[in-house]
Length: 483
Image (spheres, rainbow, N blue to C red):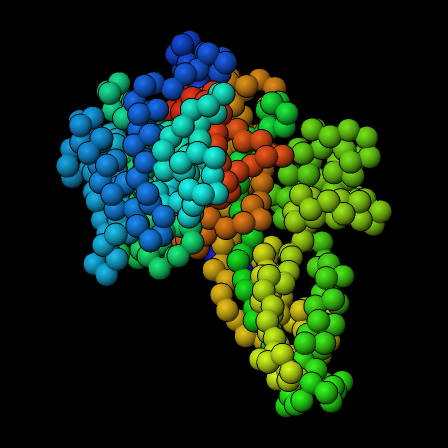
Protein backbone atom coordinates (compact mmCIF):
# COMPACT_ATOMS: atom_id res chain seq x y z
CA UNK A 1 0.00 0.00 0.00
CA UNK A 2 1.26 3.51 -0.79
CA UNK A 3 1.48 6.38 1.67
CA UNK A 4 1.96 6.64 5.42
CA UNK A 5 -0.36 7.66 8.25
CA UNK A 6 -1.03 11.09 6.73
CA UNK A 7 -2.00 9.49 3.44
CA UNK A 8 -4.30 7.08 5.26
CA UNK A 9 -6.02 9.97 7.05
CA UNK A 10 -6.60 11.75 3.74
CA UNK A 11 -8.10 8.60 2.26
CA UNK A 12 -10.26 8.08 5.36
CA UNK A 13 -11.66 11.62 5.18
CA UNK A 14 -12.24 11.24 1.46
CA UNK A 15 -14.03 7.91 1.93
CA UNK A 16 -16.25 9.37 4.68
CA UNK A 17 -17.13 12.30 2.44
CA UNK A 18 -17.89 9.92 -0.42
CA UNK A 19 -20.05 7.83 1.92
CA UNK A 20 -22.12 10.88 2.96
CA UNK A 21 -22.42 11.91 -0.67
CA UNK A 22 -23.51 8.45 -1.78
CA UNK A 23 -26.01 8.08 1.05
CA UNK A 24 -27.61 11.36 -0.03
CA UNK A 25 -27.91 9.98 -3.55
CA UNK A 26 -29.46 6.78 -2.22
CA UNK A 27 -32.07 8.71 -0.22
CA UNK A 28 -32.91 10.57 -3.40
CA UNK A 29 -34.10 7.34 -4.98
CA UNK A 30 -37.31 7.59 -2.98
CA UNK A 31 -38.17 10.73 -4.89
CA UNK A 32 -37.97 9.22 -8.34
CA UNK A 33 -41.14 9.57 -10.36
CA UNK A 34 -43.37 6.53 -10.72
CA UNK A 35 -42.76 6.52 -14.45
CA UNK A 36 -39.09 5.87 -13.68
CA UNK A 37 -39.96 2.33 -12.57
CA UNK A 38 -40.97 1.06 -16.01
CA UNK A 39 -39.71 -2.49 -16.54
CA UNK A 40 -36.80 -2.80 -18.96
CA UNK A 41 -38.68 -5.13 -21.30
CA UNK A 42 -40.65 -2.12 -22.51
CA UNK A 43 -37.64 0.21 -22.73
CA UNK A 44 -36.89 1.37 -26.23
CA UNK A 45 -34.18 3.79 -27.24
CA UNK A 46 -35.50 7.07 -28.64
CA UNK A 47 -35.00 7.46 -32.40
CA UNK A 48 -32.06 9.89 -31.96
CA UNK A 49 -30.08 7.10 -30.23
CA UNK A 50 -30.25 4.76 -33.22
CA UNK A 51 -29.57 7.60 -35.65
CA UNK A 52 -26.55 8.73 -33.64
CA UNK A 53 -25.21 5.17 -33.41
CA UNK A 54 -25.45 4.87 -37.17
CA UNK A 55 -23.62 8.16 -37.65
CA UNK A 56 -20.76 7.19 -35.31
CA UNK A 57 -20.35 3.64 -36.65
CA UNK A 58 -20.13 5.00 -40.18
CA UNK A 59 -17.23 7.27 -39.16
CA UNK A 60 -14.01 5.25 -39.39
CA UNK A 61 -12.23 6.13 -36.13
CA UNK A 62 -9.51 3.49 -36.16
CA UNK A 63 -6.01 4.58 -35.16
CA UNK A 64 -5.05 5.49 -38.71
CA UNK A 65 -8.01 7.87 -39.11
CA UNK A 66 -8.40 9.18 -35.57
CA UNK A 67 -11.39 10.43 -33.60
CA UNK A 68 -11.63 14.07 -34.67
CA UNK A 69 -14.47 13.56 -37.16
CA UNK A 70 -16.50 11.60 -34.60
CA UNK A 71 -15.88 14.22 -31.89
CA UNK A 72 -16.99 17.04 -34.21
CA UNK A 73 -20.12 15.11 -35.21
CA UNK A 74 -21.05 14.77 -31.55
CA UNK A 75 -20.30 18.45 -30.92
CA UNK A 76 -22.78 19.42 -33.64
CA UNK A 77 -25.43 17.25 -31.99
CA UNK A 78 -24.91 18.85 -28.58
CA UNK A 79 -25.00 22.38 -29.98
CA UNK A 80 -28.22 21.56 -31.83
CA UNK A 81 -29.63 20.24 -28.54
CA UNK A 82 -29.18 23.66 -26.93
CA UNK A 83 -25.87 23.35 -25.11
CA UNK A 84 -23.91 26.60 -24.93
CA UNK A 85 -20.72 26.72 -27.06
CA UNK A 86 -18.59 27.19 -23.93
CA UNK A 87 -19.97 23.89 -22.60
CA UNK A 88 -19.11 21.93 -25.78
CA UNK A 89 -15.33 21.94 -26.00
CA UNK A 90 -13.51 20.27 -28.89
CA UNK A 91 -9.83 19.75 -28.04
CA UNK A 92 -6.99 18.07 -29.93
CA UNK A 93 -3.22 17.97 -29.39
CA UNK A 94 -1.39 20.29 -31.77
CA UNK A 95 0.90 17.45 -32.84
CA UNK A 96 -1.98 14.97 -33.28
CA UNK A 97 -4.84 16.95 -34.84
CA UNK A 98 -6.68 13.79 -35.89
CA UNK A 99 -6.92 12.66 -32.25
CA UNK A 100 -9.73 14.99 -31.22
CA UNK A 101 -11.62 14.92 -27.92
CA UNK A 102 -14.95 16.42 -26.87
CA UNK A 103 -15.82 17.60 -23.35
CA UNK A 104 -19.48 18.44 -22.70
CA UNK A 105 -20.80 19.91 -19.45
CA UNK A 106 -24.33 20.15 -18.03
CA UNK A 107 -24.08 22.90 -15.47
CA UNK A 108 -25.39 22.58 -11.94
CA UNK A 109 -26.60 24.78 -9.13
CA UNK A 110 -22.98 24.94 -8.04
CA UNK A 111 -23.12 22.38 -5.23
CA UNK A 112 -20.41 19.76 -4.80
CA UNK A 113 -17.78 18.45 -7.16
CA UNK A 114 -18.54 17.22 -10.63
CA UNK A 115 -19.39 13.75 -11.88
CA UNK A 116 -17.31 12.76 -14.91
CA UNK A 117 -18.27 10.13 -17.49
CA UNK A 118 -15.54 9.03 -19.90
CA UNK A 119 -15.81 7.06 -23.14
CA UNK A 120 -13.42 6.56 -26.03
CA UNK A 121 -14.40 7.21 -29.64
CA UNK A 122 -11.68 5.17 -31.34
CA UNK A 123 -12.16 1.56 -32.42
CA UNK A 124 -9.87 -1.31 -33.39
CA UNK A 125 -9.18 -2.14 -37.00
CA UNK A 126 -11.73 -4.11 -39.04
CA UNK A 127 -11.24 -5.51 -42.55
CA UNK A 128 -14.25 -5.79 -44.83
CA UNK A 129 -13.06 -9.14 -46.20
CA UNK A 130 -13.10 -10.62 -42.69
CA UNK A 131 -16.70 -9.62 -41.95
CA UNK A 132 -20.07 -10.81 -43.20
CA UNK A 133 -21.21 -7.18 -42.98
CA UNK A 134 -19.54 -3.87 -43.74
CA UNK A 135 -17.90 -3.04 -40.39
CA UNK A 136 -18.38 0.68 -40.98
CA UNK A 137 -22.09 0.51 -41.74
CA UNK A 138 -24.70 -0.11 -39.04
CA UNK A 139 -26.60 -3.24 -40.08
CA UNK A 140 -29.69 -4.53 -38.29
CA UNK A 141 -30.28 -8.25 -38.78
CA UNK A 142 -32.37 -10.75 -36.79
CA UNK A 143 -32.49 -8.61 -33.65
CA UNK A 144 -28.81 -7.62 -33.74
CA UNK A 145 -26.98 -4.42 -34.59
CA UNK A 146 -23.70 -5.10 -36.41
CA UNK A 147 -20.83 -2.65 -36.82
CA UNK A 148 -17.36 -1.88 -35.51
CA UNK A 149 -17.66 -0.26 -32.12
CA UNK A 150 -21.28 -1.07 -31.27
CA UNK A 151 -20.14 -2.84 -28.07
CA UNK A 152 -16.67 -1.27 -27.68
CA UNK A 153 -17.70 1.42 -27.26
CA UNK A 154 -19.68 3.64 -29.60
CA UNK A 155 -22.90 2.12 -28.29
CA UNK A 156 -22.04 3.35 -24.80
CA UNK A 157 -20.92 6.72 -26.19
CA UNK A 158 -24.36 7.12 -27.72
CA UNK A 159 -26.03 6.12 -24.45
CA UNK A 160 -24.07 8.80 -22.57
CA UNK A 161 -24.71 11.46 -25.21
CA UNK A 162 -28.44 10.74 -25.45
CA UNK A 163 -28.78 10.69 -21.65
CA UNK A 164 -27.09 14.08 -21.31
CA UNK A 165 -29.18 15.59 -24.12
CA UNK A 166 -32.35 14.15 -22.58
CA UNK A 167 -31.55 15.73 -19.21
CA UNK A 168 -30.95 19.06 -20.98
CA UNK A 169 -34.25 18.79 -22.86
CA UNK A 170 -36.12 18.03 -19.64
CA UNK A 171 -34.70 21.15 -18.00
CA UNK A 172 -32.99 19.04 -15.35
CA UNK A 173 -30.49 21.03 -13.30
CA UNK A 174 -28.09 18.71 -11.47
CA UNK A 175 -26.87 19.37 -7.96
CA UNK A 176 -23.33 19.09 -9.31
CA UNK A 177 -21.96 19.46 -12.82
CA UNK A 178 -22.26 16.50 -15.15
CA UNK A 179 -19.30 16.18 -17.52
CA UNK A 180 -18.96 13.70 -20.36
CA UNK A 181 -15.58 13.37 -22.08
CA UNK A 182 -15.53 11.57 -25.44
CA UNK A 183 -11.88 10.76 -25.98
CA UNK A 184 -9.22 9.56 -28.40
CA UNK A 185 -6.77 6.73 -28.67
CA UNK A 186 -7.71 4.17 -26.03
CA UNK A 187 -7.32 1.24 -28.40
CA UNK A 188 -4.28 0.18 -30.44
CA UNK A 189 -1.85 3.00 -31.10
CA UNK A 190 -1.78 4.95 -27.89
CA UNK A 191 0.31 7.90 -29.09
CA UNK A 192 -2.28 10.53 -28.04
CA UNK A 193 -4.52 8.99 -25.37
CA UNK A 194 -7.31 11.46 -24.78
CA UNK A 195 -7.89 10.94 -21.06
CA UNK A 196 -4.19 11.16 -20.26
CA UNK A 197 -3.77 14.26 -22.43
CA UNK A 198 -6.83 16.03 -20.99
CA UNK A 199 -5.70 15.34 -17.43
CA UNK A 200 -2.24 16.74 -18.22
CA UNK A 201 -3.26 19.80 -20.23
CA UNK A 202 -6.92 20.61 -19.39
CA UNK A 203 -7.35 19.13 -15.94
CA UNK A 204 -9.80 21.82 -14.86
CA UNK A 205 -12.24 20.81 -17.58
CA UNK A 206 -12.59 17.23 -16.34
CA UNK A 207 -11.76 17.50 -12.64
CA UNK A 208 -14.33 15.46 -10.73
CA UNK A 209 -15.06 13.75 -7.43
CA UNK A 210 -16.53 10.68 -9.12
CA UNK A 211 -15.64 9.06 -12.46
CA UNK A 212 -17.85 6.58 -14.32
CA UNK A 213 -16.27 4.67 -17.21
CA UNK A 214 -18.69 2.32 -19.01
CA UNK A 215 -15.74 0.84 -20.92
CA UNK A 216 -14.50 -0.68 -17.66
CA UNK A 217 -17.90 -2.14 -16.83
CA UNK A 218 -19.47 -5.41 -17.84
CA UNK A 219 -23.00 -6.78 -18.06
CA UNK A 220 -22.97 -10.54 -18.55
CA UNK A 221 -25.55 -12.92 -19.91
CA UNK A 222 -25.58 -16.53 -21.07
CA UNK A 223 -28.09 -18.20 -23.38
CA UNK A 224 -30.24 -15.11 -23.29
CA UNK A 225 -30.37 -14.96 -19.47
CA UNK A 226 -29.15 -11.73 -17.93
CA UNK A 227 -26.84 -12.58 -15.01
CA UNK A 228 -25.04 -9.57 -13.58
CA UNK A 229 -24.02 -5.95 -13.90
CA UNK A 230 -20.49 -5.36 -12.64
CA UNK A 231 -19.17 -2.43 -10.65
CA UNK A 232 -15.49 -2.34 -11.60
CA UNK A 233 -13.37 -0.78 -8.87
CA UNK A 234 -9.94 -1.78 -10.15
CA UNK A 235 -8.01 -3.36 -12.95
CA UNK A 236 -4.81 -5.28 -13.25
CA UNK A 237 -1.71 -3.29 -14.11
CA UNK A 238 -0.41 -3.84 -17.65
CA UNK A 239 3.31 -4.72 -17.63
CA UNK A 240 5.46 -6.19 -20.40
CA UNK A 241 8.97 -7.64 -20.18
CA UNK A 242 11.40 -8.68 -22.86
CA UNK A 243 13.64 -11.66 -22.06
CA UNK A 244 16.68 -12.60 -24.10
CA UNK A 245 19.59 -15.00 -24.11
CA UNK A 246 22.61 -15.10 -26.44
CA UNK A 247 25.46 -17.39 -27.52
CA UNK A 248 28.40 -17.21 -29.92
CA UNK A 249 26.59 -19.26 -32.57
CA UNK A 250 28.37 -21.33 -35.18
CA UNK A 251 27.71 -23.89 -37.92
CA UNK A 252 24.52 -25.91 -37.59
CA UNK A 253 26.50 -29.12 -38.16
CA UNK A 254 28.19 -28.60 -34.77
CA UNK A 255 25.32 -28.13 -32.26
CA UNK A 256 26.12 -27.12 -28.69
CA UNK A 257 24.36 -27.21 -25.36
CA UNK A 258 24.34 -23.41 -25.24
CA UNK A 259 21.75 -23.07 -28.04
CA UNK A 260 19.73 -19.94 -27.02
CA UNK A 261 16.50 -21.27 -28.50
CA UNK A 262 16.66 -24.39 -26.33
CA UNK A 263 17.62 -22.42 -23.23
CA UNK A 264 14.78 -19.97 -23.70
CA UNK A 265 12.29 -22.71 -24.59
CA UNK A 266 13.18 -24.63 -21.42
CA UNK A 267 12.77 -21.49 -19.32
CA UNK A 268 9.39 -20.69 -20.89
CA UNK A 269 8.23 -24.23 -20.23
CA UNK A 270 8.97 -23.66 -16.55
CA UNK A 271 6.95 -20.44 -16.71
CA UNK A 272 4.00 -22.24 -18.31
CA UNK A 273 3.79 -24.48 -15.25
CA UNK A 274 4.02 -21.67 -12.71
CA UNK A 275 1.21 -19.89 -10.88
CA UNK A 276 1.71 -16.69 -8.96
CA UNK A 277 0.49 -16.82 -5.35
CA UNK A 278 -3.17 -16.12 -4.64
CA UNK A 279 -3.66 -12.43 -3.90
CA UNK A 280 -7.19 -11.32 -3.06
CA UNK A 281 -8.31 -7.72 -2.74
CA UNK A 282 -11.48 -6.47 -1.09
CA UNK A 283 -13.07 -6.32 -4.54
CA UNK A 284 -12.13 -9.85 -5.57
CA UNK A 285 -13.29 -11.29 -2.23
CA UNK A 286 -16.68 -9.72 -2.77
CA UNK A 287 -16.61 -10.77 -6.42
CA UNK A 288 -16.41 -14.44 -5.42
CA UNK A 289 -18.99 -13.99 -2.67
CA UNK A 290 -21.52 -12.51 -5.12
CA UNK A 291 -20.50 -14.66 -8.10
CA UNK A 292 -21.36 -17.74 -6.07
CA UNK A 293 -25.04 -16.74 -6.27
CA UNK A 294 -24.96 -17.63 -9.97
CA UNK A 295 -23.41 -21.08 -9.44
CA UNK A 296 -24.43 -24.41 -7.95
CA UNK A 297 -22.77 -27.38 -6.27
CA UNK A 298 -19.03 -27.52 -5.73
CA UNK A 299 -18.28 -24.36 -7.69
CA UNK A 300 -20.71 -22.38 -5.55
CA UNK A 301 -19.17 -23.79 -2.38
CA UNK A 302 -15.64 -23.00 -3.58
CA UNK A 303 -16.54 -19.40 -4.46
CA UNK A 304 -18.28 -18.87 -1.13
CA UNK A 305 -15.17 -20.19 0.64
CA UNK A 306 -12.90 -17.78 -1.23
CA UNK A 307 -15.24 -14.89 -0.47
CA UNK A 308 -15.19 -15.76 3.23
CA UNK A 309 -11.42 -16.32 3.31
CA UNK A 310 -11.81 -19.98 4.25
CA UNK A 311 -10.94 -21.73 0.99
CA UNK A 312 -8.67 -24.77 1.24
CA UNK A 313 -6.06 -25.70 -1.34
CA UNK A 314 -8.44 -28.06 -3.14
CA UNK A 315 -10.94 -25.24 -3.70
CA UNK A 316 -8.18 -22.94 -4.97
CA UNK A 317 -6.98 -25.63 -7.37
CA UNK A 318 -10.47 -26.15 -8.80
CA UNK A 319 -11.01 -22.44 -9.35
CA UNK A 320 -7.49 -22.02 -10.75
CA UNK A 321 -8.25 -24.61 -13.43
CA UNK A 322 -10.83 -22.26 -15.01
CA UNK A 323 -9.46 -19.23 -16.86
CA UNK A 324 -12.36 -16.97 -15.83
CA UNK A 325 -11.72 -17.47 -12.12
CA UNK A 326 -7.96 -18.06 -12.21
CA UNK A 327 -7.32 -14.55 -13.50
CA UNK A 328 -9.27 -13.11 -10.56
CA UNK A 329 -7.14 -14.97 -8.03
CA UNK A 330 -3.62 -13.89 -8.98
CA UNK A 331 -1.18 -12.00 -11.14
CA UNK A 332 -0.53 -13.69 -14.49
CA UNK A 333 2.38 -13.55 -16.92
CA UNK A 334 2.37 -15.30 -20.28
CA UNK A 335 4.60 -15.48 -23.35
CA UNK A 336 3.02 -13.65 -26.29
CA UNK A 337 5.88 -13.41 -28.80
CA UNK A 338 9.06 -15.37 -29.51
CA UNK A 339 11.85 -15.15 -32.07
CA UNK A 340 15.31 -16.63 -32.48
CA UNK A 341 18.06 -17.47 -34.92
CA UNK A 342 19.23 -15.71 -38.04
CA UNK A 343 19.89 -18.38 -40.68
CA UNK A 344 18.69 -21.86 -41.60
CA UNK A 345 22.18 -23.38 -41.44
CA UNK A 346 23.60 -21.49 -38.45
CA UNK A 347 23.36 -21.98 -34.72
CA UNK A 348 21.28 -19.18 -33.20
CA UNK A 349 23.15 -16.35 -31.58
CA UNK A 350 20.05 -14.90 -29.93
CA UNK A 351 16.55 -15.86 -28.79
CA UNK A 352 13.97 -13.40 -27.46
CA UNK A 353 10.48 -13.59 -25.99
CA UNK A 354 7.86 -11.11 -24.85
CA UNK A 355 6.20 -11.76 -21.50
CA UNK A 356 2.91 -9.95 -20.96
CA UNK A 357 1.87 -9.57 -17.31
CA UNK A 358 -1.40 -8.47 -15.72
CA UNK A 359 -0.56 -7.52 -12.17
CA UNK A 360 -2.89 -7.41 -9.15
CA UNK A 361 -3.08 -3.83 -7.79
CA UNK A 362 -0.63 -3.41 -4.94
CA UNK A 363 2.08 -5.69 -6.34
CA UNK A 364 5.22 -3.95 -7.60
CA UNK A 365 6.85 -4.47 -11.00
CA UNK A 366 10.10 -5.35 -9.21
CA UNK A 367 8.43 -8.17 -7.27
CA UNK A 368 6.93 -9.54 -10.48
CA UNK A 369 10.30 -9.46 -12.24
CA UNK A 370 11.97 -11.15 -9.28
CA UNK A 371 9.38 -13.94 -9.37
CA UNK A 372 9.89 -14.42 -13.11
CA UNK A 373 13.67 -14.57 -12.76
CA UNK A 374 13.32 -17.24 -10.10
CA UNK A 375 10.95 -19.27 -12.27
CA UNK A 376 12.98 -18.99 -15.49
CA UNK A 377 15.99 -20.05 -13.41
CA UNK A 378 18.64 -19.19 -15.96
CA UNK A 379 21.26 -16.56 -15.13
CA UNK A 380 22.06 -16.10 -18.82
CA UNK A 381 18.56 -14.77 -19.54
CA UNK A 382 18.40 -10.97 -19.30
CA UNK A 383 15.34 -8.83 -18.66
CA UNK A 384 14.20 -5.51 -20.10
CA UNK A 385 10.97 -3.59 -19.59
CA UNK A 386 9.05 -3.07 -22.81
CA UNK A 387 5.93 -1.46 -21.34
CA UNK A 388 6.21 -0.13 -17.78
CA UNK A 389 3.23 -0.43 -15.47
CA UNK A 390 0.94 2.55 -14.89
CA UNK A 391 -0.06 2.39 -11.22
CA UNK A 392 -3.81 1.96 -10.91
CA UNK A 393 -4.88 1.84 -7.26
CA UNK A 394 -8.17 0.24 -6.31
CA UNK A 395 -11.06 2.68 -5.90
CA UNK A 396 -12.97 2.32 -2.61
CA UNK A 397 -15.66 -0.34 -2.80
CA UNK A 398 -18.23 1.89 -1.11
CA UNK A 399 -21.32 -0.12 -0.04
CA UNK A 400 -23.63 2.84 -0.65
CA UNK A 401 -22.41 3.13 -4.26
CA UNK A 402 -23.12 -0.55 -4.85
CA UNK A 403 -26.61 -0.13 -3.37
CA UNK A 404 -27.30 2.80 -5.68
CA UNK A 405 -26.38 0.75 -8.74
CA UNK A 406 -28.47 -2.14 -7.40
CA UNK A 407 -31.51 0.11 -7.10
CA UNK A 408 -31.27 1.22 -10.73
CA UNK A 409 -30.50 -2.31 -11.95
CA UNK A 410 -33.31 -3.96 -9.98
CA UNK A 411 -35.90 -1.46 -11.21
CA UNK A 412 -35.08 -2.63 -14.71
CA UNK A 413 -34.07 -6.27 -14.14
CA UNK A 414 -35.18 -7.58 -10.71
CA UNK A 415 -33.37 -10.88 -11.13
CA UNK A 416 -29.94 -9.45 -12.06
CA UNK A 417 -27.24 -9.22 -9.38
CA UNK A 418 -24.67 -6.43 -9.03
CA UNK A 419 -21.16 -7.79 -8.88
CA UNK A 420 -18.03 -5.98 -7.60
CA UNK A 421 -15.26 -6.67 -10.10
CA UNK A 422 -11.58 -6.24 -10.88
CA UNK A 423 -10.93 -6.18 -14.63
CA UNK A 424 -8.10 -8.37 -15.93
CA UNK A 425 -7.65 -5.92 -18.80
CA UNK A 426 -6.87 -2.21 -18.85
CA UNK A 427 -9.01 0.85 -19.52
CA UNK A 428 -8.68 4.63 -19.35
CA UNK A 429 -9.65 4.47 -15.67
CA UNK A 430 -6.00 3.81 -14.89
CA UNK A 431 -5.25 7.45 -15.65
CA UNK A 432 -7.98 8.88 -13.42
CA UNK A 433 -7.25 6.45 -10.57
CA UNK A 434 -3.57 7.31 -10.71
CA UNK A 435 -4.54 10.91 -9.83
CA UNK A 436 -6.70 9.84 -6.91
CA UNK A 437 -10.06 10.23 -8.69
CA UNK A 438 -12.37 7.40 -7.53
CA UNK A 439 -13.36 5.63 -10.76
CA UNK A 440 -15.89 2.91 -11.43
CA UNK A 441 -16.66 0.87 -14.51
CA UNK A 442 -20.44 0.56 -14.82
CA UNK A 443 -22.25 -0.54 -17.97
CA UNK A 444 -25.51 -2.37 -18.68
CA UNK A 445 -24.95 -3.23 -22.35
CA UNK A 446 -25.59 -6.95 -21.86
CA UNK A 447 -23.26 -9.10 -23.93
CA UNK A 448 -23.11 -12.88 -24.34
CA UNK A 449 -20.26 -14.24 -22.22
CA UNK A 450 -19.95 -17.22 -24.59
CA UNK A 451 -19.91 -15.16 -27.79
CA UNK A 452 -18.45 -11.77 -27.01
CA UNK A 453 -17.36 -10.02 -30.19
CA UNK A 454 -15.66 -6.85 -29.00
CA UNK A 455 -12.51 -6.40 -31.15
CA UNK A 456 -13.63 -9.37 -33.24
CA UNK A 457 -15.33 -10.22 -36.52
CA UNK A 458 -18.97 -9.21 -36.92
CA UNK A 459 -19.03 -7.18 -33.70
CA UNK A 460 -22.63 -6.86 -32.59
CA UNK A 461 -25.03 -5.93 -29.84
CA UNK A 462 -28.66 -6.93 -29.41
CA UNK A 463 -31.20 -4.32 -30.47
CA UNK A 464 -33.00 -4.60 -27.13
CA UNK A 465 -29.72 -4.63 -25.19
CA UNK A 466 -28.77 -1.34 -26.82
CA UNK A 467 -32.19 0.20 -26.19
CA UNK A 468 -32.14 -0.84 -22.54
CA UNK A 469 -28.62 0.44 -21.93
CA UNK A 470 -29.66 3.85 -23.21
CA UNK A 471 -32.42 3.89 -20.57
CA UNK A 472 -30.12 2.53 -17.83
CA UNK A 473 -27.46 5.15 -18.56
CA UNK A 474 -30.01 7.95 -18.35
CA UNK A 475 -31.33 6.76 -14.99
CA UNK A 476 -27.90 6.23 -13.47
CA UNK A 477 -26.56 9.55 -14.72
CA UNK A 478 -29.56 11.38 -13.31
CA UNK A 479 -29.19 9.62 -9.99
CA UNK A 480 -25.51 10.46 -9.57
CA UNK A 481 -26.20 14.10 -10.48
CA UNK A 482 -28.87 14.52 -7.78
CA UNK A 483 -26.50 14.52 -4.82
